[in-house]
Structure formats: C-alpha cells, structure tokens
Length: 256
Length: 328
Image: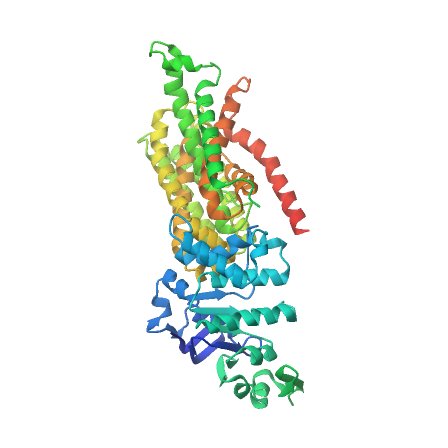
C-alpha cells in the first residue's frame, strides 16, 4: 500500500502553504516530516489524511484519489491524530478509544469485533488499568496514550500524527516512539510531524524536510538532515554529532 | 462513571412514563379513578379522559420527546452543555413562524398552515444559527449566534404584536409565546405527530456522528463522518421536531437544557447514548410538569411554558455555577 502526495499545492489567503509537494510514503516505515514553524507540515498531513482539499495536485491512496473515496472508507484505512486533540465530554478512556471504531460501527452500536479491537488498543498502550477513568482526570502522558490508542483502535493501514510527542516527558516520548515502531513493524505506514530533530533521527526510517511549502530534503535521516539543509530550512548553524544513544542534532547558533 | 446500565435505565424510564401517563389521564380538577375508565361511555368522566386528557397526555409526551432529543442533539453537535432549542432561538423562530400566520390572518384558512409555518420558522432559525456560527466550531460563537437569532425572533414577535390589526390577534399571539397544553384536541395531536415523529426519528440517527464530534470537527471528519450531511440532518430534525411542537403548544423552554444534564451522571456523557434517553426523559418531564400545573389550585391554570421557565431559570444558573467551578 502506498500513500502519495502528487504536486500538492495549498494556498491560504495570500500565503502559499504547500507548493507542489511530491512524496510517496511506504507502508511498514516511519516517516518524520520536519521543518520550521509554518513550513506546511500540518497542512501536508491534513491533505494526506483526506481532510483538506488542495488547490492543485492530489493525495493518493494506492490507485484512489483520496478525496474521491467515501469518507467512511477512507477512515477505515487512515487514522489521523490532530495536534491539539479536543475531548469535549467527560467520557471514560474505553469510550474514547471506542471512537476509533466509528467507521466500522453499524447502526446498532459496537459489535464483538469492535470491542476486541478496543481491548487490543488498550493493551498496546498499557491503558487497561485506566479504561474506566474519565479522560479529564488523566495526566498529560496518560491522555496522550489514550489518544494514540483511539487512533490505532481502527487498526488503520496508515497512522498520521501531528506532533504526537509535543508535551510528553522524555520517558513517555520513548514509550510513544516504541509504539509507533511496533505499528510500523506490523506493516502499517506511520507519518509523523516532529519538532524534535533528535527524535526524528532516532525514530524515523525516513525524514522529509519541508520549508516554505517545498520539499527541501527527503531520505534516510542522516542523509536528509545535513548541515546545509538545516541551515536552509531553519536558518541555524547545526550539525549531526554522535551522542550516547546515537546521532543527534547539535544547534550551534543562528546561521550567519 | 456510569451508575446505571442502559437496560436498567430503559426499563425504569419506561415504567415511569407508564405511571405518569396513567396519572395524567386520571389527575386534574376532576379525579377519574381507574374504575371509571372501564365503565361504558355513559359515565361523563369517560369523555374527560378520552377527549381532553388523552390528547393532552399524548401531546405532552410528543413535545417532551421532541424538545428533549433536540436539546441532546444540539448539545452534542455544539459540544456545549448550554445549547438548547430555546436558548439558541430555534423555538422563538418557530413561534415567529406561527405568529406571522396569526398576524396575517392566514392561520384559519387551513389547519396545516400554522404548523408548517412554525416548522419553516424553526428551519430558518437553524439555518441562521449555522450560518452565523460559520465553520468555526467555537462554542462561544455558537452561543452568540443563538443570542442573535433569539433576539431577532423575540423582536419580530413583539413587532407583530405591536402592529397587530386587532386585539384578537394580540391575544392569539400571546398564546404562542406562553406555551400550554390546555384544551388541546386530537386534531392538534394529528397536526404535530408527523413533524415530531420524523424529527425525532432523524435526530436519533445522528448518534454515531455526535459521538465522533466529541473529538471536535476535524476529529469527526477524520473518523469518516460527513459533516455536511450531519449538519443537514441536525437542522432538518430539529426544525421538524421543534417546529411541530411549538406549533401546537407554543414555547416551552429549558426541557432540552435540563434533560441531558440530568441524564449524564446516570448513563454517561457520550452524546449518542443520550439521544433516546433524552427523548424518553423529556416526555416524562413534560408529563409531570403538565400534571403539576393542572392540579395547582389557581384562578387560571398556570401556563406550562411559564412554569418551565420558572423552574428552568434557576437550573440554568446552577449549570453555569457548576461550569465555572470546573473551569476555575
């Protein structure tokens, strides 16, 4: 299965947010989309999730133009985790995770298969002890896990997550990384937008650097995140150095 | 968090409805015991039960169900616990539709004109609401839009009274502003039934979409919910249910606000799970409230709409205080 961006262009007001973005994503891999604030990362993700209509180009799932698929069909294949997920009511964790089954649920509510999938998602995120807790009473890390569990409860082929590590402490960020790694290991495609370049190097099989709506670099993390690319994308002087846990990005200062 | 399983709740609420319905047929200025029902039609009380109280009881249940489920659906859609057809001006717009037919004197030409006008009024109200609130899913915007719709409708009703050609028209208009179930006949049941049944039926299909909307509009769309269709069905359902109710009983507020709030602690906060229970509990609330105004000793019967507003005002305040505590 492939998910692809074909000459995606999006204009918001007089700002060209995406400018002819081309990328083909492979199943079973983690792709990190990185870039400075306002580079178009979230917009690209929204297009790939079929939630935004580009002015030009299209997002494609296998041979299907994403926007031509019925919304429910699309939702069975692609799960999307927004950057600041809203949970409006005081529902418990099991109910929240169950929302991930929406596309599969018939008029009479959830069936055995739905409940089994919810149990699997709760187990994968180690949330069983919290299943009956109200979402509002969870800590930030637990809440983030519950939202990831919601996204994977539909057992989608693709998981698109916008800044899934934002607000997580280092421990929980590592747990989340393991979870994404496990999903990719099951043959699912994982596309994440990330601000943390070290996390991108550590987690991703491939890094896509976006700047001003264009693809600046695309490849294996260490090939994509070169000093030249970082200077061009972020306007900083930075280099990839060897850390204790593997390569990491050291920012020296503003590029001159 | 749930203190009652759904089957237990449904059995309990249906039993309560049955008890209230029987009581509603029996209670009033003249108490009609069960024995009189079984008697032949020679008993004069038989007529009281079947031509006065039966339509009134049926209407109370229909209107309560319509308002209860409309409130639950609007709260689910807006993710705002203060949303309700009365608060958001939909009921007032329905009343405006009814009032315009009275003002223009066309209501007497055919029985269907007034309820249809009320439904159109409610539909215009919902369209205004959705248009004013726009694509933003901010609940503040939605409530502000509701206040605008409400203000417009109230002003237009006042203008109609102001310019009314004769005192009779003013009197009729006041009838719509103060909701009541008194002296309603089988004809009114027949008028309201189609709109209420269609409206409630449509709103009950929205459970999956309203559940998904817990994750916000983007979240719901990513779960495969067609938001355009959801908006259309919500608007159509609320317009039919509220329009048909207001057409035969006038404005009865706060039912849609109170009912979902009372039910959330009992059966949980999932919006889709609140729809059918809100319809049943709304029916029970209006039945009980109507019986109360009927047996309250007063020179003239207290209007149900007035009684609900007197009960609803303080309840609204309590909700606001509880919300402020949660935010603080």
